[in-house]
Amino acid sequence: MRGLSILSTKKLLLNQKELLLNARVSLVEYDAISIEYLDFEAPSVIENAIFTSQNGVRAVENLGLKIENCFCVGKKTKALLETKGQNVIKTSEYGAELAAYIVKNYKKESFYQFCGTIRREEIPSELNKANIPLTEITTYQTVLKPKKFERIFDAVLFFSPSGVQSFLLENDSTNSPVICIGTTTASEAKKYFKNVVIANATTVESVIAKAIKTIKN
Image 1 (cartoon, rainbow, N blue to C red):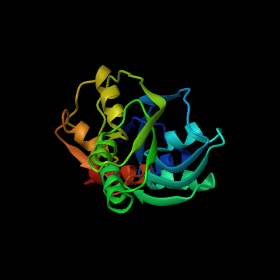
Image 2 (image 1 turned 30 degrees about the vertical axis):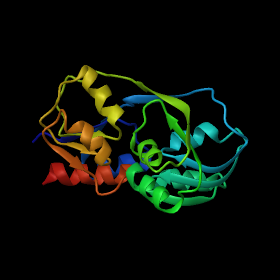
Image 3 (image 1 turned 180 degrees about the vertical axis):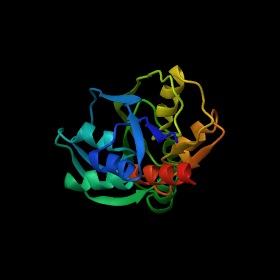
């Protein structure tokens, strides 16, 4: 009987790989995208800052900015901010949820958002509708790193819409299930793949667990 195999479009940590090893699933991994940090200017003191990824946090960590309040997307973004000594007011799983919270509770405030060249519209759009001033600062760019695979995997793991786009530059869509880290990534995947499964939580570990369960059922 052929062994089960998974392709991850993001290189995994050792403890994450062990989840697959323990489940007797072989792994092929590569980084479908890379991050390049950009030069940018920002005020030395910011009252309210929005971070939608860990990349935005890393882009500002050595600038010595004084940030009073942070609002962010994702538990790992929150954890990284807190390790930097930042005060995290609100964390949401998705940008739309964070935007709704800000509109409801901070109508008289102004915000800075640290983001990449590819960013979702929910936060700028909703704050603009509510006439909440938002200054966007682009801190990094996402670079696609396509790679061709001459085999079929039992599942493919995706962690961002950009990862989906990068994979498809060199590979055809597959009938195998693709496991996505969240609804945003899944929305992009559904344009090209028939069998799209969303992890229970927006973590790499949850994506792996869902993949193992999906291909072993």
